[in-house]
View: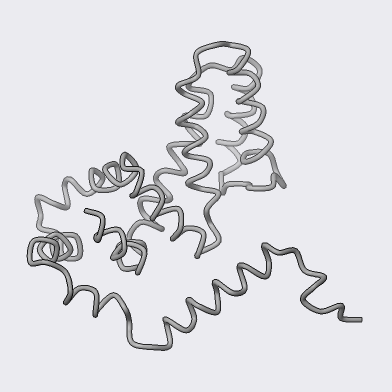
Length: 183
Protein backbone atom coordinates (compact mmCIF):
# COMPACT_ATOMS: atom_id res chain seq x y z
CA UNK A 1 0.00 0.00 0.00
CA UNK A 2 2.64 2.55 1.02
CA UNK A 3 4.68 3.74 -1.93
CA UNK A 4 7.24 5.50 0.27
CA UNK A 5 8.67 8.99 0.13
CA UNK A 6 9.31 8.84 -3.62
CA UNK A 7 5.56 9.04 -4.24
CA UNK A 8 5.23 12.33 -2.34
CA UNK A 9 5.60 15.67 -4.14
CA UNK A 10 8.95 17.32 -3.49
CA UNK A 11 7.27 20.25 -1.71
CA UNK A 12 5.84 17.86 0.91
CA UNK A 13 9.27 16.38 1.54
CA UNK A 14 10.81 19.85 1.81
CA UNK A 15 8.14 20.94 4.30
CA UNK A 16 8.69 17.80 6.35
CA UNK A 17 12.42 18.54 6.47
CA UNK A 18 11.68 22.13 7.54
CA UNK A 19 9.38 20.88 10.28
CA UNK A 20 12.09 18.51 11.49
CA UNK A 21 14.55 21.38 11.71
CA UNK A 22 12.08 23.61 13.56
CA UNK A 23 11.19 20.82 15.96
CA UNK A 24 14.87 20.23 16.65
CA UNK A 25 15.34 23.92 17.42
CA UNK A 26 12.32 23.87 19.70
CA UNK A 27 13.62 20.89 21.66
CA UNK A 28 17.02 22.47 22.23
CA UNK A 29 17.86 25.72 23.97
CA UNK A 30 16.35 28.61 22.06
CA UNK A 31 18.78 30.09 19.58
CA UNK A 32 17.08 33.45 20.02
CA UNK A 33 18.34 33.83 23.59
CA UNK A 34 21.92 33.22 22.49
CA UNK A 35 21.54 35.58 19.55
CA UNK A 36 20.32 38.34 21.85
CA UNK A 37 23.57 38.18 23.86
CA UNK A 38 25.59 38.49 20.63
CA UNK A 39 23.77 41.63 19.45
CA UNK A 40 25.27 45.08 19.82
CA UNK A 41 23.86 47.21 22.69
CA UNK A 42 21.98 49.38 20.17
CA UNK A 43 20.27 46.34 18.63
CA UNK A 44 19.57 44.89 22.09
CA UNK A 45 17.82 48.16 22.93
CA UNK A 46 15.70 47.87 19.75
CA UNK A 47 14.70 44.32 20.65
CA UNK A 48 13.88 45.30 24.23
CA UNK A 49 11.65 48.15 23.01
CA UNK A 50 9.83 45.74 20.70
CA UNK A 51 9.47 43.02 23.34
CA UNK A 52 8.39 45.45 26.10
CA UNK A 53 6.89 48.49 24.39
CA UNK A 54 6.28 51.70 26.30
CA UNK A 55 2.86 53.39 26.27
CA UNK A 56 4.06 55.66 23.46
CA UNK A 57 5.37 52.70 21.46
CA UNK A 58 2.06 50.90 21.92
CA UNK A 59 0.24 53.83 20.33
CA UNK A 60 2.61 53.51 17.37
CA UNK A 61 2.43 49.68 17.33
CA UNK A 62 1.04 49.46 13.81
CA UNK A 63 3.93 51.53 12.49
CA UNK A 64 6.41 48.74 13.23
CA UNK A 65 4.41 46.31 11.09
CA UNK A 66 4.12 48.93 8.34
CA UNK A 67 7.89 49.44 8.42
CA UNK A 68 8.45 45.69 8.19
CA UNK A 69 6.25 45.47 5.08
CA UNK A 70 7.98 48.48 3.52
CA UNK A 71 11.39 46.77 3.73
CA UNK A 72 12.28 44.01 1.24
CA UNK A 73 14.37 42.15 3.84
CA UNK A 74 11.52 42.51 6.32
CA UNK A 75 8.99 41.09 3.87
CA UNK A 76 11.32 38.20 3.02
CA UNK A 77 11.92 37.35 6.70
CA UNK A 78 8.22 37.64 7.55
CA UNK A 79 7.29 35.47 4.55
CA UNK A 80 9.82 32.84 5.61
CA UNK A 81 8.26 32.86 9.06
CA UNK A 82 4.75 32.54 7.61
CA UNK A 83 5.94 29.61 5.47
CA UNK A 84 7.11 27.88 8.64
CA UNK A 85 3.58 28.33 10.00
CA UNK A 86 1.98 27.24 6.70
CA UNK A 87 0.21 30.60 6.28
CA UNK A 88 2.26 32.31 3.57
CA UNK A 89 -0.92 32.82 1.54
CA UNK A 90 -1.65 35.87 3.70
CA UNK A 91 1.51 37.79 2.75
CA UNK A 92 1.27 36.55 -0.84
CA UNK A 93 -2.28 37.89 -1.08
CA UNK A 94 -1.31 41.20 0.52
CA UNK A 95 1.62 41.61 -1.90
CA UNK A 96 -0.54 40.68 -4.89
CA UNK A 97 -3.06 43.34 -3.82
CA UNK A 98 -0.29 45.94 -3.49
CA UNK A 99 0.87 45.11 -7.02
CA UNK A 100 -2.73 45.21 -8.23
CA UNK A 101 -3.31 48.70 -6.78
CA UNK A 102 -0.36 49.99 -8.82
CA UNK A 103 -1.69 48.62 -12.11
CA UNK A 104 -2.51 51.38 -14.60
CA UNK A 105 -4.20 49.82 -17.65
CA UNK A 106 -7.75 48.48 -17.39
CA UNK A 107 -6.97 45.34 -19.42
CA UNK A 108 -4.18 44.36 -17.02
CA UNK A 109 -6.40 45.32 -14.08
CA UNK A 110 -9.08 42.87 -15.20
CA UNK A 111 -6.58 40.03 -15.74
CA UNK A 112 -4.84 40.58 -12.41
CA UNK A 113 -8.17 40.86 -10.58
CA UNK A 114 -9.32 37.52 -11.93
CA UNK A 115 -5.98 35.87 -11.08
CA UNK A 116 -6.04 37.21 -7.50
CA UNK A 117 -9.62 36.05 -7.11
CA UNK A 118 -8.87 32.58 -8.50
CA UNK A 119 -5.68 32.17 -6.45
CA UNK A 120 -6.75 33.63 -3.09
CA UNK A 121 -10.42 34.60 -2.70
CA UNK A 122 -12.49 31.93 -4.42
CA UNK A 123 -13.68 29.11 -2.15
CA UNK A 124 -11.24 26.18 -2.48
CA UNK A 125 -8.64 28.42 -4.18
CA UNK A 126 -5.09 27.01 -4.15
CA UNK A 127 -3.94 29.70 -1.68
CA UNK A 128 -7.32 30.58 -0.16
CA UNK A 129 -7.07 33.31 2.49
CA UNK A 130 -9.29 33.28 5.55
CA UNK A 131 -12.10 35.74 4.76
CA UNK A 132 -15.56 36.03 6.21
CA UNK A 133 -18.48 35.44 3.84
CA UNK A 134 -19.48 39.13 3.71
CA UNK A 135 -15.97 40.18 2.61
CA UNK A 136 -15.94 37.41 0.00
CA UNK A 137 -19.32 38.64 -1.35
CA UNK A 138 -18.06 42.24 -1.50
CA UNK A 139 -14.96 41.21 -3.45
CA UNK A 140 -17.00 39.04 -5.81
CA UNK A 141 -19.36 41.95 -6.45
CA UNK A 142 -16.41 44.29 -7.04
CA UNK A 143 -15.10 41.97 -9.76
CA UNK A 144 -17.99 42.90 -12.06
CA UNK A 145 -16.32 46.28 -12.55
CA UNK A 146 -12.68 45.98 -11.37
CA UNK A 147 -10.90 49.09 -10.13
CA UNK A 148 -7.78 49.70 -8.04
CA UNK A 149 -9.67 49.31 -4.75
CA UNK A 150 -11.45 46.09 -5.73
CA UNK A 151 -9.70 44.03 -3.02
CA UNK A 152 -9.30 46.78 -0.41
CA UNK A 153 -11.66 45.29 2.20
CA UNK A 154 -10.14 41.81 1.88
CA UNK A 155 -6.61 43.21 1.95
CA UNK A 156 -7.38 45.21 5.10
CA UNK A 157 -8.80 42.10 6.81
CA UNK A 158 -5.73 40.06 5.88
CA UNK A 159 -3.39 42.86 7.01
CA UNK A 160 -5.21 43.04 10.34
CA UNK A 161 -5.00 39.27 10.77
CA UNK A 162 -1.26 39.26 10.10
CA UNK A 163 -0.65 42.26 12.36
CA UNK A 164 -2.62 40.90 15.31
CA UNK A 165 -1.95 37.18 14.98
CA UNK A 166 1.23 36.35 13.04
CA UNK A 167 3.34 39.45 13.67
CA UNK A 168 3.56 39.10 17.50
CA UNK A 169 4.76 35.50 17.05
CA UNK A 170 7.21 36.65 14.37
CA UNK A 171 8.76 39.09 16.86
CA UNK A 172 9.64 36.14 19.08
CA UNK A 173 10.95 33.94 16.27
CA UNK A 174 14.42 33.09 14.98
CA UNK A 175 13.45 34.69 11.66
CA UNK A 176 13.10 38.04 13.42
CA UNK A 177 16.46 37.71 15.16
CA UNK A 178 18.04 36.78 11.82
CA UNK A 179 16.47 39.94 10.34
CA UNK A 180 18.08 42.06 13.06
CA UNK A 181 21.49 41.10 11.65
CA UNK A 182 20.60 43.09 8.50
CA UNK A 183 19.46 46.21 10.37
